Length: 339
Ligand code: 5AD
Image (cartoon, rainbow, N blue to C red; front, side, top):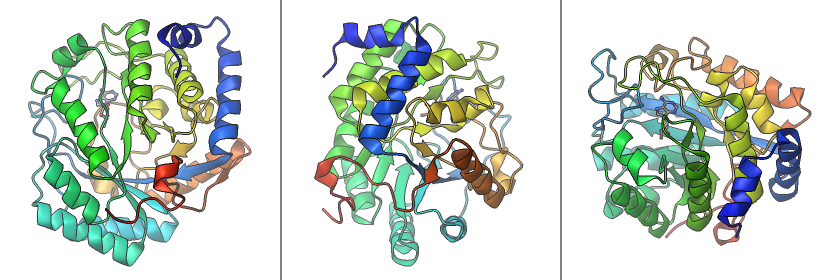
């Protein structure tokens, strides 16, 4: 376990290139050279929360809301599986009110007919709901804690409780999921020391995946005009997370692609080993804008897939052909098969 002084020293190094090189080496030794592609399906932008930073917040009346039907979600998943994806991420706003039995039936069908790994990113739920989703075949769950600072959490998520979010992360483990969590960097008022604390918390939670990205102010939110995280801060944080956490999956996230066209490529050379191409049907994409500048809004799913395969090959790496389960030994090579 690295202590706070060690994490701070990495984050504030005066030689960031050496930090990136070291992170790239740790990545190669602990997770290998293959890049995992996860097809992201943003199946509903309906959200019951009012997070100040997010374009999907309940109070944003400027966004048209959609909910894909479960048949439509299945079709999108089947299309992605046909393109070659071995792993899919189903994401939506929180509490978008799909009946539990419908979600579970959808998961069983995806597992039975497509056989892909499935990650859910659908927010805070009860332990019973998590168990039901896991039993229906979902393998992994992403739930960012967003920030370890209670002051920032309260300010930016005024209708949520940090304690409840941490409780949910514990429940996800109990339910047998491979668990991913993470943060945004560059939030207004966030200090480097807070980011160091975030990384210590990731270490404590012993996560399987880390989802993190740069904050980008959205004009349709109360944080309009408050800028975005720099490429430098984003890459420093990424490299530090890789060095500290070692055998975890870390995506070069879409928000990284939004702050700088080179960012995702640079991220793959500074610790990242996963890309999450958007395979949401094109007609919904502009309605799913958490932040502005999201790349690939108008691209068809197959274009997006090819674009990212090209990106991976251009840096001399190759796309993995397995589902890319957790690297932690308790999940074995094929992930948990049941609970
Ligand atoms: N900028 C960057 N990331 C954002 N998210 C939400 N809003 C923004 C924004 N304005 C992130 C949150 C959330 C994830 C799905 O997207 O971290 O957990």
